[in-house]
Image: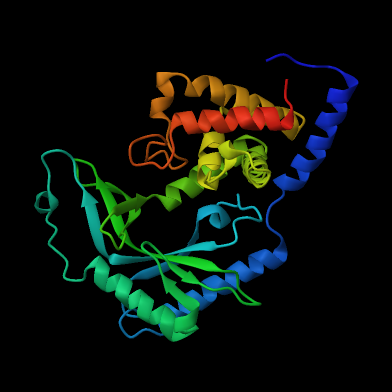
Amino acid sequence: MSVNNSAANINSSSNWEDKFKRWSTGPGKTEQERCENAISMIKSAIDASDKLKTKSIRVFLQGSYRNKVNVQADSDVDVGIVCSDVFYGDYPKGYTRDSFGYVAASYSFDDFKDDVEAALVAKFGRAAVTRGSKAFDIKANTYRVEADVAPFMEHRRFRTDGSYITGVQQFSDDGKKIINWPEQHYENGVGKNNLTSRKYKRTVRVLKKLTNEMAASGIDEAKNVPGFLCECLIWNVPNNYFNCATYYDVLRNAIIYLYQELGKDSSDDWGEVSELKYLFGPSQKWTKQHARQLLVAAWNYVGYE
């Protein structure tokens, strides 16, 4: 890849930089207020439920809105509802629940999900609540954004000494186990953003918006690419690659680094932003090949040389 210093290329890079600056900005005040309204109303739904109000439950913002990497296409606010009265454990080899003195719980995840559904329907009405395999969709109105509300129970990854790190776990309606680490994801993202003069999250937004525009333009490599994958790719770019004066150059450097490293076996060990799950593996919806194809398409779409 060679640098082209022609006047035409300089003009093109200036136009892209103007666009990237717009794309890099975070959510506006009105959008934030609507998110807060959605959270507040979901909390009130839980508090009004006779079955849930006595349990240890936390309602929290998750996903792109929580991590402040949302773009306009991220229309749904991701809300988590976690019950910590019950946990699911991941134990070291040779250890079980009994090793640490825990007993089986009588309240199941299926019971919890049913109770959450009843609470949401009582608050918003049956017509506004759609049950999905993993989350409930709450329809938007004039004062709250559309929300995907996912029920969880606590997940604990134990060490041999009985200490543990805490995440969340759920089961889809078809029985698939899903474990996420929202707090670790959030803390790591904040840390990297601070270490890159706030360019990390802005670059994530730029790549997400670019991918969306490419998909809308009919570029197959950009279609159905999750924004989460874009976020995790930029997460794996070393901090020094963000030391550029323009987002145009930051993205250029990131694409070069990612494309090269994804061709190496060492990138098999790359993690999601939480660094508690592998980014590439049999359980993911994407592969390193898909990521490299997106990067090549993005390079060509912008006109980098």
